[in-house]
Image 1 (tube, rainbow, N blue to C red):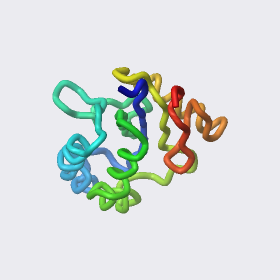
Image 2: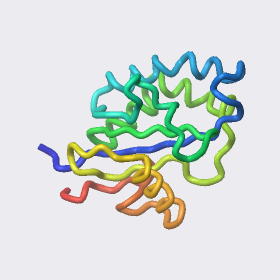
Image 3: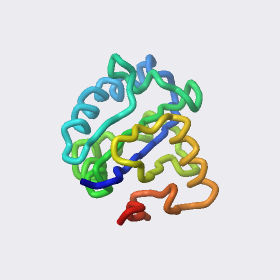
Image 4: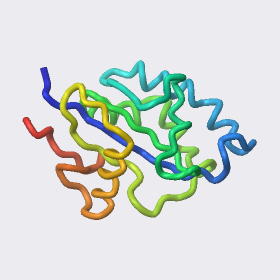
Length: 149
């Protein structure tokens, strides 16, 4: 059994509140895209409230959505992000979210069974923004092997 799993966090600053008409199509697709992630090979876990809502958690401010999940490996996450219906939503990102000038996706290895907190994930994102990709915080373009590999 592998000793590590891949954690990821991505953030997005909304142009309008989730309740605004301009965000309606994004909101309408949330359940479908989350269900797609959860049924994807290699998916392990995602941060959400007891009601299944990840958008209610705003540790980086009211306008910033935070998505944290854990995957078996980088290949599984990559397939979900770039080879599933998720890519159709990603292509529309600029309709709903501000353009980010700094890193908004970070990956890091966690011990199998560990579920990262928002505080932990934000610290990893800040590390990536400050130091670029390292073993402690990296991207899908520049990945690192798990510590025990």
